[in-house]
Each structure stands twice: as C-alpha cells, then as structure tokens.
Length: 91
Image (cartoon, rainbow, N blue to C red):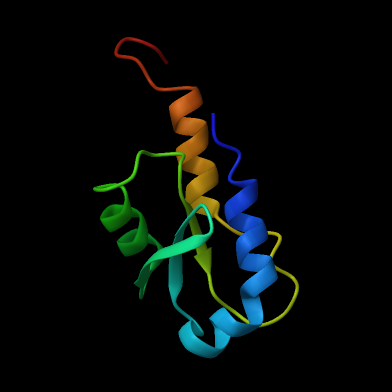
C-alpha cells in the first residue's frame, strides 16, 4: 500500500513555489509531479482517480505556511478504503 510520503515530501519541499503558482487550488500529486490542479478537493479526486489508482496519489490544498499536517485528506481516505474495502453484507 502506498504511504504517499514521497508526494507529501515533494509538496513540502516545493511549497513556496507551488503557492506562488497555485495558491488556494487543490493539487493532485503523483510521485514528484503535479498531475492536476483543481478548484475543489472533490474535483481533484474525481478527475485524478480516472488516471491513477486510488491510494497512489495525494490531493493537497495549496496554501502558504508550514502548517500542512492535514495534507491529503482524500488520499488518506482513499488509502484506507483500499486497505479496508466494504463488502456487501458487512456492517
């Protein structure tokens, strides 16, 4: 299962430059590359999952400041969903 550490480290390392270009947008990051820029987290997830498997990309709200610990909330949900998929008949 992907941990998305590489993607998050890429964001943290390049945050200042990314904010200059994409402030307030939601970035889809795979590896060390921004693969999409969106106006909402849901739009980022919906579009990115069409080309990349769930749990293999990070959705990051691009904002200034070093307090980005809540990064990739969709990615966390997606990773958890892959690890523990729901099954019919289970509660």
